[in-house]
Each structure stands twice: as structure tokens, then as C-alpha cells.
Image (cartoon, rainbow, N blue to C red):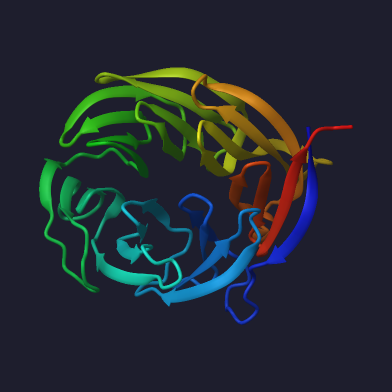
Length: 323
């Protein structure tokens, strides 16, 4: 199998103050949301073969750099520091800010329906709490404390029905708020837990290439069990879940020619069997300290894939059998 280049498209806005795209996310592969300037969220539509078409923009009430995010019920929740914004994605051609607030000490959060579970640290009310998602801009949230003083240093959480799996500095926590049902030691710096089925997670290291890039973890009743781990000394730059296939872009720890330049590889996993299916090199080299060279998004549809770099270049490929 090989990747045949098809075309390259630019999503770069030359009028923007920042000269690279630092955030990109999609719910499925129909529409892609990006941030170049820190307070302008752009949306582009993607064709069946992942050809982009520029769409609308919406100005955010806060400047956000590399924000964390969650898609939930046709909405995109973004947070950076203590600032949180709720954007409606129900009509992608007309994105709308539905609400926002500032919550001191906000470290991590997860939305289930209209409830927002929040982790706070170094604030007057540290711990795990719950509040309502904002419905207007500049709200003052009323937070109900669930576990006062909890200091988990969590970054992201996966939502599995009415339960959460928090990624913390010590590992993973399975929670039916506010009760912790299980803990699993997991060596990571910044792990992103992605729900790939109702009972299975792909846990991806997104910061430190001295760790293991990806592990599959099963939720068995009220406990967590690691199934398999892949690619030590690498990190995950981008991913796309399509059916029972999880495709990721791995950035290797090894340098190119002794310099601080790193190779990227496209790797496909079967989430049902927790097995690696395919690995293909990508023609991109990430240069340390140059955000324009970093892979920020991956889209996969059928035998097509698209890779977005921080430079704004979107590269399209088609998988073909070697002759």
C-alpha cells in the first residue's frame, strides 16, 4: 500500500496576525474548524474526497491559543485557561457563539448534555464541580462542588454515556460523577482519551515523544483494563476515527540527520481487535520550534486522507495498492 499525492490546498489567511494555524478539529469529516488568529474561528466544508471550501468565520469573546475542546450535541466547547466558549455547530455555514464564561482555575472540563463537569486548581474552590453550560456570553457560572479539594491535575476526559474517564498525571480515572469507580496507572505527560466504542478507549500521548504513543483500554463494568500498547518513544499529532478504524499521525522521537527534525507516519488501527493494520510514511518533516511544520489535523474518508499542517497547507492523498 502507498499514499499517492492528489492535491494541495491552502487554508492560510494572509490577513491574519498569526502566521500559522494552531488549532484544528472536526466532528466527522464534513466540516473543519480552525484557529489562526486567536479569536477568530473559521469553518470550511470538505467534499466527499476531502477537498476544502472556505466557509464562515465567527469571532470569539476570548483569545485562545491551542485550546482544549470537546464536540457535544452539535456544539463545540473550547477552553483555554479559565475561559470557556460554547459554539453551535448545528448549522456549520453559520457558526454561532451560544455562551461563554470565565472560571478561575479551570484546568479541565467535560460536557454531558447541558451539564459541565469542571476540574479547578489553584483557585478559591479547588476540586471537581458541576455547572450548566453557558447560554449567553459573559455569564457568571454557579458551580456545585462535588469533590472539594480534589487535585487530579486532569487535562481531558472521555465521555462514555453518563460516565467519564479523566486523564490525569497519575493515570486514568473512571468516574460516575462524583464517584471514582476505578483507577489505572498510566505513564503519560498529556494523554488524550478518545472513546472509540461504548466500552473502549484509545489513549494517546500528545506531548512527550519519550512515552508510548497509543494504548487501547477497555472498560469492564466498573474497572479499567489495558489491552495493548503501540509505538514507544513517539507521540500522536492528529487522529481520525471512522467506523472501526482509528487512523493517527505519529511523530517519531528519532531525529532526521542528527538535527531536531522529526518524521511523521500514518498508522491505522482496528479498534475492535486493538491491532495495528497498516503503517505508511508521510512526506512531512516537523522542525523543532517551527509551528508551520507541525501536523495539526487529519481527515480520512474511504480511501482518501487529508493532512493539515500549521502552515495552512492541506495535503490530500489516496491509498493505492503497490504495482
